[in-house]
Amino acid sequence: MSWVRIPSLTPLVGGLSPPTFVIASEAAVGHALMPRLTELLGRWRDDLAAWAIPEHISSAVTESPWVLPRQVFARRADRLRRDPAGPSYERAREALEPEGSLIDVGAGAGAACLPLAPQVASLTAVDTDAQMLTLLAERAEPLGVASQVICGPWPAVAAQIGPADLVTCHHVTYNVPDIEPFIAALTSHARRRVVVEMSAVHPLSALSPLWLRFHGITRPQAPTAMDLLAILSEMGLQARHTGWNRPVERDYASESELVEVTRRRLCLPPERASEVQAALRDLGTQPGCPADLGSSGRDVVTMWWEGSA
Image 1: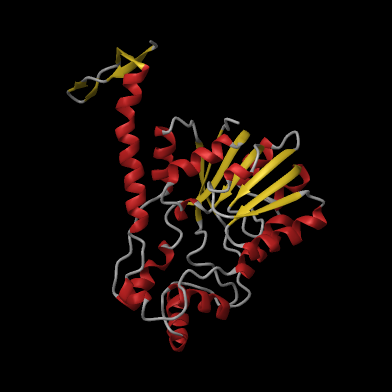
Image 2: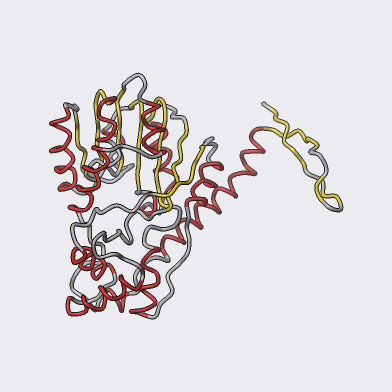
């Protein structure tokens, strides 16, 4: 049986004493940590469930509020490919020196993977939206990137895919209630590194003032990126992270496009579009450069850790 030394902190008046150590078996330590992980995973799942739209609101409209503005994702991918920057890009580029293979989970139109094209020997893009993958493939081909697209949810499709040097996953985790196997599959498919990018708070938090204004309901505040970092730690992953602010960019072609997407997300009928426009302007949206609300957020966290493949 293996044994480990674990710190035992004794409280003193005005603070804590220097750590002393007790001896425990690795099995006992693992047993002690599991309840903490179980608690964090349960809280993550419950916090995400609290974001469900009340049935009396969603049933009052015929359009789905879970609108996916593909054209916005495509513009963002094109912009980042032309001018790659940011901590997530830098941490991923480091892992592709020398060049290597890449799996991009929740790839969308390619905002995470296409900026890395000069260092990518082969690309596997995973997404649940086939049309989004078509947009990505159309952009990858002129760059000379050998790409494969897999349409389906992660980690359900993970068994179809071999390991890669780098695994990236941008702005997907808030859509994953069962986060532990999702993270485990990312890790087991990466030889060198996993890079995850997510907004610091739930990506729909920017719409919370509008839910209160139009429907009189208060939206949740959890989970956050810090909650995921706690889960990673309890899973035994030595993840590093950095917080940063994404500059406001014009990924929406017009104010009217932003109004239409926001209206649907708020479960409001078309005839209330002018009210949504007024509300967005009250929040500071500039007609000439409509900032995205409820997609990626401005405050972002990049996390990265070693793979196990």
